[in-house]
Amino acid sequence: MTERAAPDVRKADLLPFEPGDERGLELALSSPDDTLVQALRRCPGDIMVLGAGGKMGPSLSRMARRALDADGRTDDTVYAVSRWSNGGLEDSLARDGVRTLKADLSIRDELDSLPAAANIVYMAGQKFGTSEAPERTWLLNAVVPQSCAARFRGARTVVFSTGNVYPLVAASGRGSRESDPLVPTGEYAASCVARERLYALAAGGDTPIAIVRLNYAIDLRYGVFVDLANRIFNDESLDVTTGWVNVIWQGDANRMALMALAHATNPPVVFNVTGRKRLSVRAQAIELGKMLGRTPNIVGQEAPTALLSDAGRMLRRLGKPSVTEERLLSWTAQWLAGGGRRLNKPTNFDVRDGSF
Image (tube, rainbow, N blue to C red; front, top):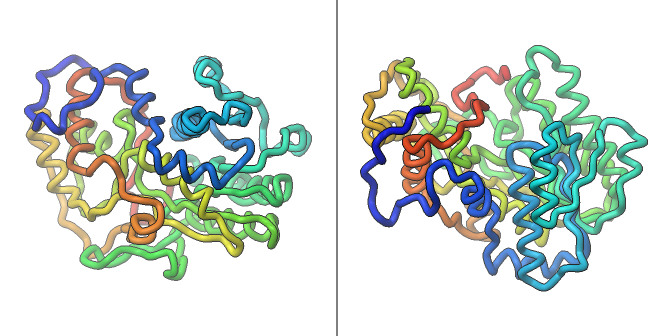
């Protein structure tokens, strides 16, 4: 992307690092706070992140390492497990004190070769490509979690899930709560319900578990706001039929997930991890367009339903996000206007039939 004039934003909403400074971004995404350091004191021992090679895994692994270091826990190891197709990422994590391990979790011998750990963060799974290869999605989202749960039975565990396990709900309402019935739409969402159920079953009654239902994390290189900006930059029509959305800064999502380790119970406790506000897609696109000096081509009319989650339990037990949705929109505009890299990994937040 060619460099553009910097958006006109409030001083309080200025990006805390230079647009395009990926090291600065990674440090921001992995910065722990005192509440996380204190929470992890209740979780002694090593931390192992399974499926750490995705969009969130590297920064979450770094945050875990930095939180332990801040508490003087230099003897406890943070393991990041992945197939590591990106060797540069593996080397970068190693330089930051994270011990990387290469393993395909779907291969039993490789899973069994992993060391024991007192704390597990399970992040492995597949979303995109489900329509073309549903059998692989079920393998990665149901069979592999069951195997990992049995392998690390007894370890304090956070299992990543998704808000897609809920149905579309009234856009004018409170959003889905953790106690609401799960009514998944499509095979991806159904496989994520299976992940939750089978992990808890295979882990048994002696494994404390917290399930994190996330939607939608933004790290400036990808996310709902980046999706909107891409359509604005490309002069593409921006359909607002899915007219409302929740978002959260990925650094806050990382912190909430690690905080959840200290709240794990059996039966599992569930947390919706998302932003506090129900955002109008139309309003965000218009504001983002103003910041970027473009006029979005908005089409369609808002449907009465959307995929929305109530973050009340997270706010009460894990804390409030440190970055507001307004600031996150401003940061995204500054990052993109300054030529910051994009990952070209759309969220497809506007898909309504569950096909990914």
